[in-house]
Length: 81
Length: 259
Image (cartoon, rainbow over all chains, first blue to last red; front, side):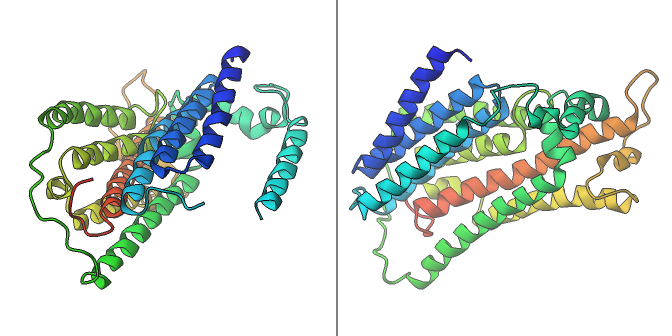
């Protein structure tokens, strides 16, 4: 673990988490949530938990984002919150 | 209400950050988790007891196989619940739903379709590699199953749902998902039938040819191969359920239309 690398990842992690909560367009929120999953996958890989990172990349960033986007296309694209 | 929620989140977040100071340092060999006899046993004995270099897989599929078996059941149940609820909506609201346009989507991009045609076999081959090589490298049934399921989802996105469903009908999808659970539980029951504990794969050594001289004894290899069998079962369940959830979710249970 290199702390400069971790710091950059953590900053982007927090930014992407806030964006995916705040943004009104739910399609953008789903994609930014995929970015969040990918960043946390990189953090886990950096900590040596390669199996967890692999699962996060496949499930969180891959199929999870696809499920969210499929749901957004069938419900509403704009958040009322 | 929003301010109240923010205060609750801020207080709990501050408590978590405060509590984090008591955690042992990352990778500290003196931490309680690393000092415990079970952790030391896994780290020092996993290779010699199961002949599996990736000790995460050894813990997941062998030492804690019971846990993983019911994890597979959880995925199966969740998928069946989603398919059941959305399928029910299709049966009851058939009249109230607006009719889908039945026109053949002719504007599907040739470049997209042909790229997917080249990409999907590679993805599926990689998925099989991840499943089969989970003992030696990161991966296993869950990850490989997800990649396999995503390759079908990619085909459904590139073409449309009916084209993708021509290969795997929903009924067969549910059958494959159940088959995965049966493979896993059946391996456990088989070791029970051989007068051993549930999911004790070393009891299955009778199914292996006798070990040649100089090779590892067959009760150790039986644990390694038993893990492979249950990983294949997990991959069956996960890939079928992933594709099933996508097909029902993206079409609201109607199983028609494209993305």
